[in-house]
Amino acid sequence: MPHTDNGRSRKRQNARRALRGETPSTVAVLADEKDFAAMRRYTSFLFDDHATYLRHVEELLRSMTAQGTYTSVTLFDPDDYERYCANRHLNPDTALSRTRYTADVAAAGTKVPYEGQSLARLLPRLIDEAEQQATWEYASALLSAGGGCATCGEDIGRAAFARASRALRLILEAVGEGAHHLVCSVPTGEGTPLIAVLHAECRDGSLHLGEAAALVFCTVLAAGFAIDRPGGIVLRSSLTGRPDTVRGWGLRDGGLRPLTEAEVFDAYCTDAETGEPVPPEHGVEYRAGIPLDLEGDA
Image 1 (tube, rainbow, N blue to C red):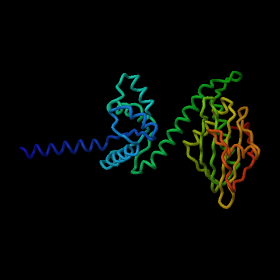
Image 2 (image 1 turned 60 degrees about the vertical axis):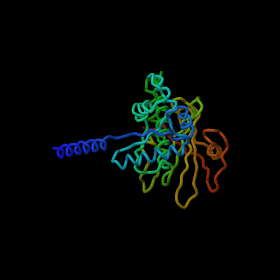
Image 3 (image 1 turned 90 degrees about the vertical axis):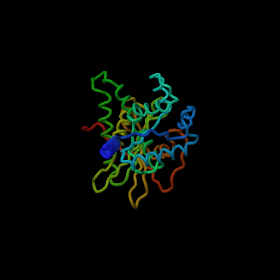
Image 4 (image 1 turned 180 degrees about the horizontal axis):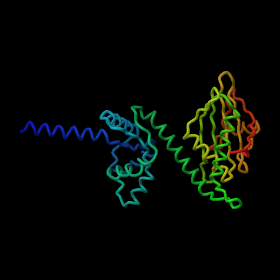
């Protein structure tokens, strides 16, 4: 009889272990020093320095992976956490509240799967994807607020997005072969401008780009068309055996105006966020933007 009980006990333990392996997990991490410092005001948060905290997070991720648990990593936002606790009348100074926040809010945001990579490699990717998602959401909100055209009734956001998609296609068709790095910047009147970055490569007549990044790029450009802000696009192209070239376009009256060589130089050699001058790069050619027919068939 004892032998039978031991066998049943081991079977139950194995079943629970197997079930844990089939239960995904999300770890919310404080990615930068500022967020980490904000959490240190809670006595239940037991870490004293950010480097030690990140080392423990990485050890936790490795341990969970070794146990067969599929784990993803997301960002922990202290300000959002504080609002979450206030709205639900929770004590923010408990591990349970932090766990609940991660399950309810953080896990629903941008996540990156943990595949054994170091946090030094994973966190920049996570931050980049989170910023891209936030940019897309804000630009989409601007488009949605446009409503319908008072003259023709057409949905302004939908028309602007179609126009932006056509503009991107025409630009990439015009520059042709090579690796292309595009930056679209649209001021919103609320401080930091909307900025979208897209990497595209055209080789042997085929175009390769990330669909998610292209969606964000077109949404930001469309928002610029819809709210009629003086933003623009800067394009840097690289082709083996030739100097890199930089071109640019300015947003104007719902369209894209090609910049002159001098304007391209000024735009490329100015920080989009701070407005401070940036030294020009040696061996880079600054060229006028290419005229684009945005009035053709969509």
